Image (tube, rainbow, N blue to C red):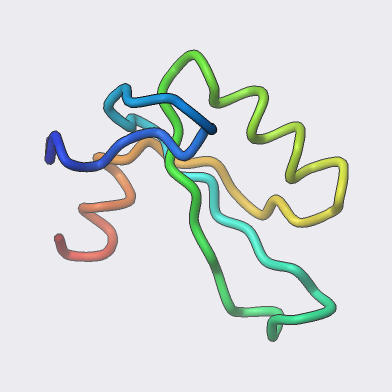
Length: 71
């Protein structure tokens, strides 16, 4: 795993292991996906934050996301 990929939670410097794919339907087309990265500790918090706003589309293990993207 690429150690430069860190959690998107404010102040966290831990390695990311999850990708939270999301979009804001007021700003983005339905197929557009923005991403936040999360460590194990912050995955649920970040998913809840996005989910409460109706933005969360998918949560995927980083290694699976990278394989799907051909990284």
